[in-house]
Length: 96
Image 1 (cartoon, rainbow, N blue to C red):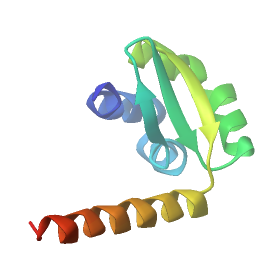
Image 2 (cartoon, one colour; image 1 turned 45 degrees about the vertical axis):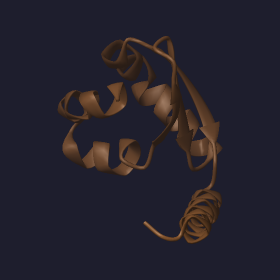
Image 3 (cartoon, rainbow, N blue to C red; image 1 turned 30 degrees about the vertical axis):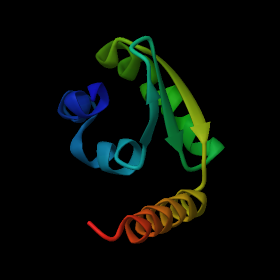
Image 4 (cartoon, helix red, strand yellow; image 1 turned 60 degrees about the vertical axis):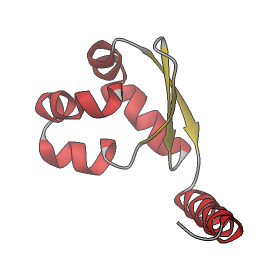
């Protein structure tokens, strides 16, 4: 994925500590080649990223960036539901 391919470039531009605090928590929701949709934990987080790194990210990724706020708790709940559904599917198929 394009996001993962560029994480080292982003880290090099903004520094490892800043990267760990502000970029590492971001999750890619979708990437259609023109726009990358990123999940961030709060509106404050989104505002900080836009203000401080938005242009750098768009330049490195060569894409327009859209942010969507999704709390870490909501992400965890979605992960647990997805994992549960996958396990149920394996059980119905007789295990993997």
